[in-house]
Image 1 (cartoon, rainbow, N blue to C red):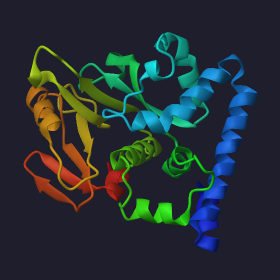
Image 2: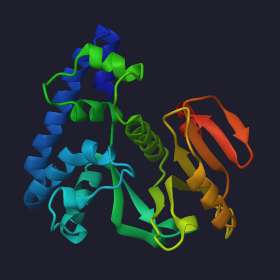
Image 3: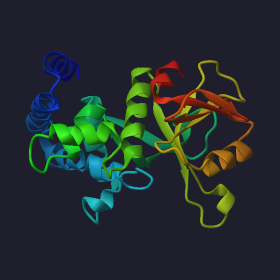
Amino acid sequence: MPQAILEYQDTRSFEDVDRIKRQILNLYHNCIDRYAGKYATKVNSIYEAIPAQLQLHDHKFQLADLDKNARFRNYASAFFWLRDAKMVNLAFNTTEPSIGLGLKQKDNSLKCYMNDTGLMISHAFNERGIVSEQLYQKILKDKLEINAGMLMENIVAQMLVANDCKLFFYSNSSRENKDDRMEIDFLITKSTITSRHNISPIEVKSSTGFSTVSMEKCLKKYSTHLSQAYIVHTGDVDRDGDYLYIPLYMVPCL
């Protein structure tokens, strides 16, 4: 958020920045209460749950955590209200990583990212009000026991949306065939439309020791549909076989 960045430029204080971000979060809540109408309760419950939902292993939003009897059809308007208000970025699961991702999306299987990763940190650590300087320093130096993948994936989603990419992912939890079980964080479409080699899969890795099993399965099964595969990681640019490894800051170049 520009206002938070300006505050840091002036004060170099994360606590002062956090106060600005909490003012923005309060403004969001006020907007929900004022403008979401009959959806306000559901919109608020979704928004409050975002950090906890992104902490889950696959980052997919589990409506049952809000209400064991919840159904997507009853919450769809609340998700879309948040998206249209540009408070969140929604990613939808597609049944096949091939051309026309939107034609194969599963509306009831989605990830809900916050529109701004800095706001998400303030939103996630809200037990005692202002997030302390020490906490921010630990986050920056990777000395805090949190799911760093949650933060990196949210950043990637934010940058892809800024590049006018619609967000899709591929998740298959098949119990019949282990070769079909895979999780691909993001799928983006090349601007040139062809019947082959049109989709680039993206995996986001926050640690130095990581597995590419899902990507290997995806490339093997859907080779005719896929273009360059990207691994977003904490290291430098590198190429290894089918993979192009890029640092986080290069995502806007995709």
